[in-house]
Length: 610
Image 1 (cartoon, rainbow, N blue to C red):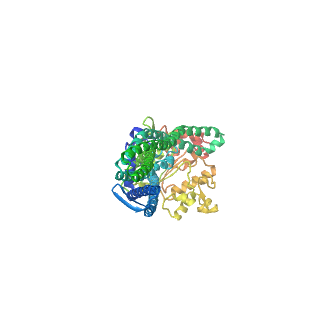
Image 2: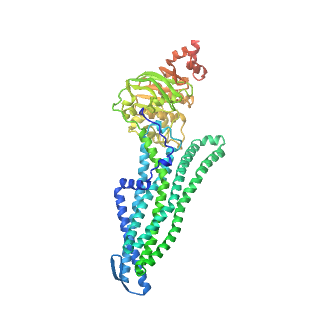
Image 3: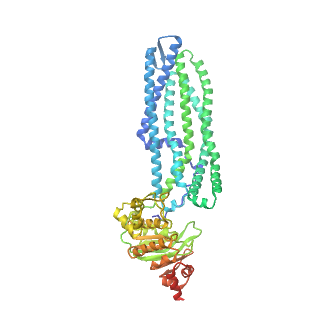
């Protein structure tokens, strides 16, 4: 049910100037809070791996120098460390450090993979949880394919931010270790590394900003494309019938073309950052080596270690820059997902405190509803129904019948007026008791791709005997028993075809399975053949008096089971009374009966009144 204070929020765009300025740090902080042990393990293994790599580089440089000088041992100073060893000892030490670096590399590879898969599952679970808790008012405003795109491609793009954040931590910590090691060897080396990293960060920042803007445009394009694809699938049958495949392809091609350029820019910029970084780092390394050579040429071993550290730090600096670029390009997806989840969660109405027991009265008191505040869909409706009554609702297309159904189901709150159950506002009852008390059969039957039993049960704890009893009441049990697998028969979209009448009666059984107090049917027989219509009519006749029944119908024959009929025209009540009263007083109902050729009983009544 909805709270009357629910407010409309846009989920379709996130202005660039509203995005957080410290997105990179925000993602890292989010990972630290979400997975502290994994992040601590990643940090420790990265630091240890960095020192192991620095040691391997030192051993490589000194061993290469020994081999070049044809010496068998070495006695030198590397920063604060006094090194005195044979070439054999250096090689053993190098192998040990390399194996340690390998083992730590396995850890720093596994932890990010675990972080990414866990965060991906969490994002999908949280978004779907928020969507299912959202009000119908918000869900119904989503564009076609909007949520499907968010929970698939947008999450896949957003998860790159978490992957990049984990990689960024590893690269940054290893880079920092190499800087510290270089400081120990030569302050000039550290200065060179910092100079390279700072210069490249400044040069590449404009490319990062451009990539972020193009990623935001790409996000918009993906949403529009997803809506077009979803619509094409839904209308595939009509497209074939009308021979509109070529125009449908043109329409989808237009969607593809709309995000082709931003997609090209995003991919190009991601590669351009790496290319520019590699090209500039070689230039800056040569300059740094020139400075180092003139500053401290005496210790060739230390100079060799510094050279290797400069090269390796350049690689890690590139990884840091790539991580930042990926994070910034992922930002529009992350922010759009957060905005959508926030809007879904904020729209969920709090549950009331009172349990709903027996439904004694249902009342709409001066209820009006408007979708856009400009034109009212319903105007000052007043309706009183006693528990156990069977009420019909009729009116021309666009009169407000579907809106009335959604209000009666608690899906939309009235814009003004009150909806009362047993004299109390509907929002005062717990959601759980309300959901048990109310059931619905839509005009278009919607089945799960699952067994008949699971379709009737519909994710609720309903025993098999209650499922069968509901099928009997809905008049579908005999049909089910004739199917080869009985209640285990798979039905639903793309499953073995069953008739529209059978699908509708399965939906009716679903509505009856939990023994509701209020059952609302929206045009239950509008698309059925006369035999299927009669079976639904027979089922409804058996239900009369056992629950409160509201039937919205265009077919006059469907309304003959109703004790009273509500006539809505232009969003307002034109008449409310028995079939005989409505026939005698004229108006829309009488005109609709006169136009109907499928309700001989009511036509006979009309003739007798004339």
